[in-house]
Length: 235
Image (cartoon, rainbow, N blue to C red; front, side):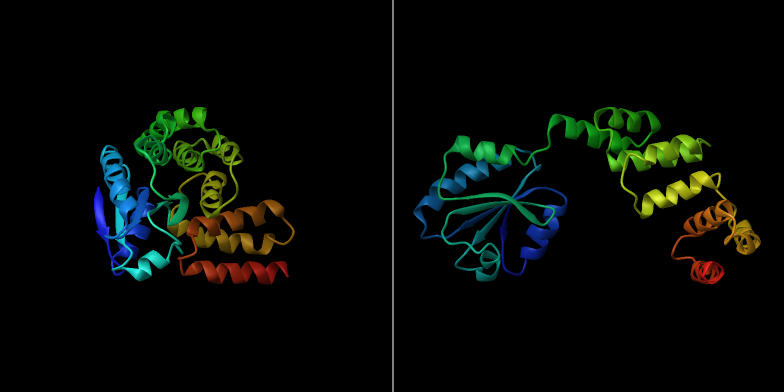
């Protein structure tokens, strides 16, 4: 895909788009001789990626704000963006082989393609295959741990979560694993009330209380109330 970018469309066409697919930015001007040599090469190579890379062309004379983003000192200048960040670039006209290697570096490897496909499938067998390739893949770990909790395999889920750093998602899944999966919503309040008097002296009760709060989630209106109650009992 090849698009002409303006100052007004830069945010959407370059930065936002780079969150989904690598974007190659070609900074050029009508008076630039080397640009006329380089641009057709870039257009050809990017077109051959079948949409896996997007080419964003910026006329620096007509779009000073967009070009200023790159603090460009001369043209042609080419930059590659992914996830809103510049990940590579070069200045000056280059041959087709150089451009091919530049664009190829932005494409996913065969393993990355396989991993993405397996994660998209999302079933237990697929996620286990991902972890054979990448034992610490966070998306696969959390996805598989979630499935294990649903199947009543809480201990295996907890062991799996130890592979990756703690996050809000890992805390949620771990809480579900320790509380036995789906706790009926109507039962959570009474269970929290029953635990309150034990949380200070009983570590097991305290952990269960915290887990139930994780199951409730931060958006549940009961959560702030019970967090305040826990703090008052502990301190």
